[in-house]
Image 1: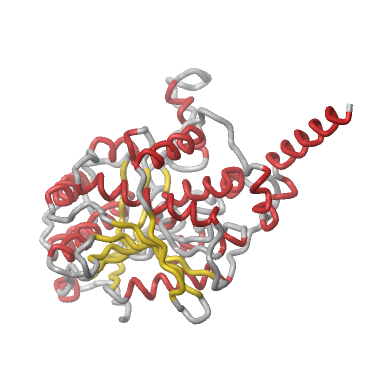
Image 2 (image 1 turned 90 degrees about the vertical axis):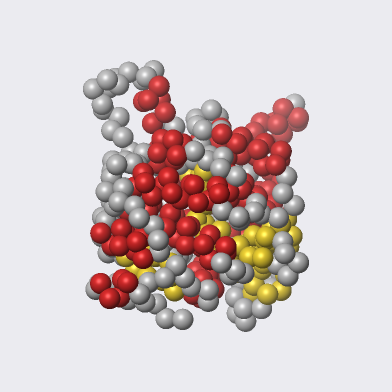
Amino acid sequence: MTKKSTPSTEESQASLTDSDLLRIGDGLQDEEPSSKSSDAEGVGESSTSRTTEKSQDVTKKLTPSSEESQASLTDNDLLQVGDGLQDEKPSSKSPDTEGDESHPAKKRRMTPLYLYRWGYLCVTDICSQSWCEQQMVYGYAPPGDIEVVESAQMKKGATLHKERELEVHDIVPIKVSSAEDAWAVKLLNMIAQVTMLQRGQKCVREIHVFGEPFDMGVFVVGVIDELRYSDNGQFELLDFKTRGVKSVPSKCQQRKESLQVCLYKRLFDDLVQGRLKKESILKHLRRNPDKRLGEEIVEYGKNVGIACTTFGELLDMALLLMAHSDIPCIDSLKIEYRYQDDEDSFMTKPVVYDDKMLRRELGHYFDFWKGDREVEGVQIEEAWKCGKCPYADLCEWRKKKDEEIKSKLFHKRR
């Protein structure tokens, strides 16, 4: 399939159908803070309705480890070209809180969730934590003048993801002019893809999901690689990974990727079960429900049967359609691994969803983002991960562990 040009005339706009998905076109450039990344782990995330190509270059997180660099696109581009538009990080010098370190609002803004992100996370932030939390933090706040270069494997993975996406739908670039517009694009894509499934299409790809898992106070966004109906009628989630070597991923890598798909399932199931509330979305994203949507977005919505003029109206409709659609919760989770050189699918791994385990893991990771504990690095038995990490020589966690070992040896000798 070929990429469609930006709809610039009434005729071209009227020809769009819900088999087309939108991609943010001109209008939002370099909107993310330059934290050297957005959140991948050698993974990128997203393609259709997310960012301009320029902003993808700016925001993509470059994860250095060899295991990470073999992972492929997931959901990182969702955090998001529109996120810098509306003072996404509130000023710490508001009149009522300036100088008052104990004020709850100011204390909240000093947590990692606001220092490194915009008050909400991507799924791949959490996956990066499961690999090495300290490395993830250095991706946002490097300990020195270190430049991490995107690997050829990561670029290849992004290309393969884009090719897979274009197998099932076209992309329509669309101009946006506000953060609400950027999220409206995601909502319209989600509506379009659910509609495709309800009309009998067996597979959709690059599906936006978001929510507040287990009501723990942290909002998470992501992009599912693929949802499909299997031959036996099961509703499956498939995550697509590419690797530079044709080998089984390490247990640590598999654990990280299993966490990823389990979180996707939780977010998607919350949407179709109506558990996610509008108030939670507006609170965490800090979007204006009365904001009028851009002309191109309103026009596209009309062409697919969505008559909305404000962000709040579109959000209401999206949540209502998800909760009252006949789309079921996800039955099974699978991860497919492909060798980059010949694109051979050499392994498909089923993943068992464990709700209690996911809640426990997220609780631990969210404690860091909410400022309830200090950052942690890898434990001694996983110190091999440091071998490819560009921050290893300056890593405070490694220094701390080295001192602990030296101290134990010293006291043992005495």
